[in-house]
Image (cartoon, rainbow, N blue to C red; front, side, top):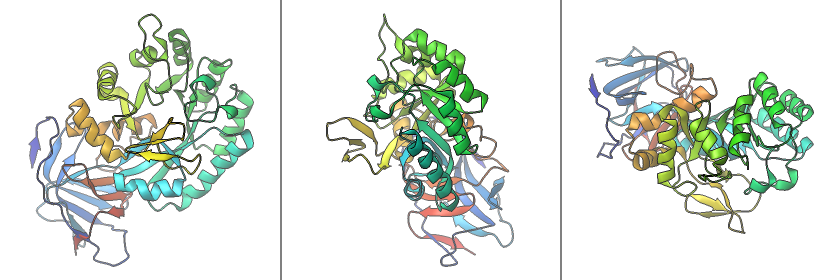
Amino acid sequence: MTRQKRKPFQAAQLCIASVSFAEKGNKTLAPFSIINAKIVLPDEIVSGATLVIKNKKIASIGKRKSVPRGSKIIDARGNFVGPGFVDLHIHGDVEEISSQQVKGGTTGFLATLHPARPKRLLANIDEVLCKKKVLSGAKVLGVRLEGPFLNRSFCGALPPEVFRAPAIKEARAILKASRGFLKMVVVAPELKGASRLIRFLRKHGVVVSLGHSGATYKQALRGIAAGITHATHTFNRMRPLDHRAPGALAAVLTDERVYCEAIADGIHVHPAALLVLLRCKRLQGMMLVTDSTQAQKEPPKRRHGEVFKLKNGTLYGSALRLNKALANACKFLNLSLPEAMQLLTLNPARMLKVDRRKGSIAQGKDADLVIFNSKCKILMTIVEGKIVYKERAWLLKP
């Protein structure tokens, strides 16, 4: 087994395997083996490796001249095999997200809900909980609320008319409706009652994220002291950095208690700003999201390259998929492939405290896997041992 040294990821000419199913219509393969793979681990790439999948889990990793008896085979033919991507920020119908985002390598995501009136918000949460049981692609790992406890002056494309003051009573109702599935809430810490709300949410195991905020540096630090540990689409919809009035941006960049997400489409955030973010937070404190609104039905929007815009020209999320974010991270930040992969696998898994099951390739972890080529094109996506997307017919040997 050869181990490659870490270096900036560069495209190379690799043979794309072709895939087909030995049993027509059967996409559940257990046990099966992936051979001739370049396995992407958090700190290295292991070439010529074999991955054995059994009972929805990674059974073994190593170099094998033979595979378990009765195991079907997927020949990766020198392509990369990495952990499935985790998107902490994506909007829209969860069924559409589940079926479409696997084409970009996403295997798990937070269903992110726009702010709405109290009854409508609870109904939206209930809809996610009902639909998550029947998804055939990427899995919903939890619910994320982008509002309603946000600053109207920093609403962006969100509807400011439904923003409201932090209220423990409403937060308690949301927690009850979520049935333990609420994982993250975005809050503007400068609002009256925000610190109390932040402490309440943290007490119930919910990640609190700073976002859509006009907080000063001091107000942001107060929110972090109360329990904020995450920043929503860093740089976007917060005060810009000023040397006399540094604002929330300076607080989240410099406080080690806060992990920062960013949209790496090259439009929401300039590549140089992403580099500043990486230098401040280092690899462990940064993660990439799509903030995709492709599956969001309302309001009406138009696509402009990798982003969506409203009729008035306001940016309304991205059309990004995480495989493109991966390629951009390698390009913009001069990262090696294992380093860039952490930004959309292990780091978000740690944020959600599911890194014992997801986020990296290791024996005993969920078989959430992606096979991709040197240009980060997804060839196959596997969720809990089930093939949910294949780029073309691969040869599956009995």
